[in-house]
Structure formats: structure tokens, C-alpha cells
Image (cartoon, rainbow, N blue to C red; front, side, top):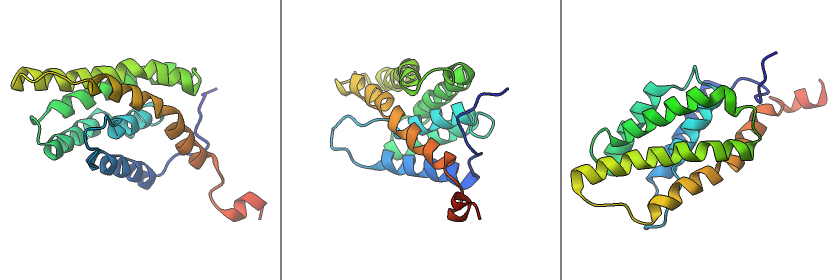
Length: 168
């Protein structure tokens, strides 16, 4: 018996919409405040729960878009998101056996790895090292795993229409 947490399969528009919302949140100016990596968070979520629909190629493409948006070296976010997606896909069967808090703790090293890749590429080409926000951003990303996962899973597990809920 296959163990799943999804009540129904997500639609393509739901996956696309959630990625678009994450991309817009990444574009917001945070004013120097350490912000979680929303795009990495949603990519890991869909890589774990729908690994055949959201894969490494999409992560690479979204990473290139982030590089263009950030004005950074073309490919640094693409490399980080590709490796992050590979790690999430490689761990997706094991992660589903943990509670959501356990999943967040298991994913924390992946979020740190993605941040380390971006920082190392930036350091290699610019010579500017990381600030204290380097350590805070992956922690915030992992901390958002629980509410974000609960929100999406609740949306997928509720009835599709109000008439289905009352049995008509």
C-alpha cells in the first residue's frame, strides 16, 4: 500500500500558482532583513510530493530566472536549486515517514547546502563573504516548512466543492 499525504492529486494550475506566488515573494524587497527562500521551499515541497511533475529541469529554469532577477552571476541559483531538487527527490520516500517537524529538521541541511552553493559561487567571483543573514535564511526557510505544508495539504484534502461536502 502506497503511503501518501495527498487527498487528491494537485492540479497543474495549483502547482503553477504556488510556484508563481513563491517567485513573487522572492522578488519583494526585504530591506536587508534575512528572508526565507520561498522558491526553494515550494520547489522542495513539490519535489517531495510530486517528484514526477516538478523536477530538476524546472528547478534549474527557476534558478536562472532568480539569477536574472537578482542580477547575480548567471547560473548560481540554477545550480543551487538543481542540487536542492535532486536532494529532495532522492529523499522524498524517506521524508514521508517523518512528522512535519521531523521533515523540517531533515530538510534543514538541504536548505543550508543550497545557500552555501550560492554563497561560494558569489565568494569565488566577487570576493565578498557572507553576512550573518547567511545562517538565518535557511533556518527561516525550514521553519516555514510546517505552516506551508499544512496549508497546501489542507487545501488538497478538503472536498472539491460545497455540494460534495454535504453529500449531494
